[in-house]
Length: 70
Image (cartoon, rainbow, N blue to C red; front, top):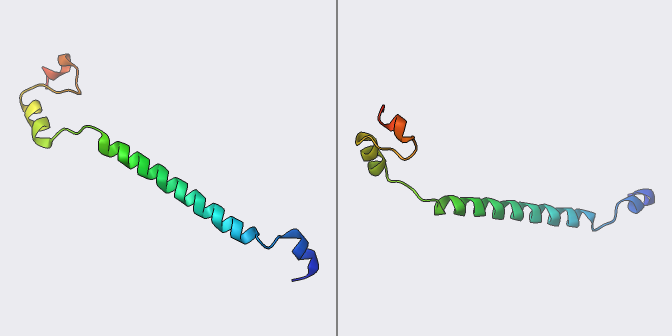
């Protein structure tokens, strides 16, 4: 490379760029992992329980005035 280009671009620049990209990827994976853990901790309703509540006419997501119509 000509000497003029050597002054514009330090030698460790590519290595720092790769390290920054790896750190960014790690941070994104950690954030995704945290969101997935929150999803796993969310309480779940079994399908059989939800079906029985619909059959019996009571549902937790609808107001009581609409539950009588359904």
